[in-house]
Length: 145
Image (cartoon, rainbow, N blue to C red):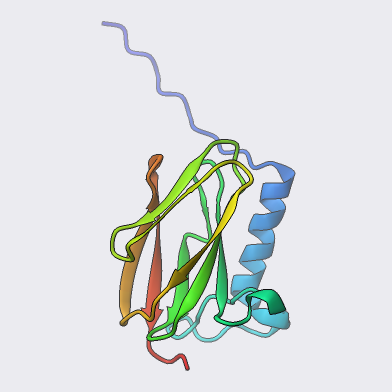
């Protein structure tokens, strides 16, 4: 049997996807309005800075062909919130969480709002059921409201 060398997997982001990743990364580091982020052990993910999504706080999650942006969302425990889930990829995706009892099928370019009831402190997994390698988590921490 002839063995072929394994090919290297190279990930190329399109310019818009790279820009989104850069902005999200800066938001996580700098926090809202360029303020320094809180210490790592108490830092929460910045909610969307849009009055339409202010009450309850809303967090943006983007699905992009096997990638979650951001892969982890840190929220205050015992606080109701929404997630705006967008599929910015080129194929359908399904946001699903058995622990949160949430499921949304998203075609290309679609978005859905998911309301999450107050969570006890802990970690809650979610995934793309159409691509089981894509996993993320919500971390609910004390220290919020």
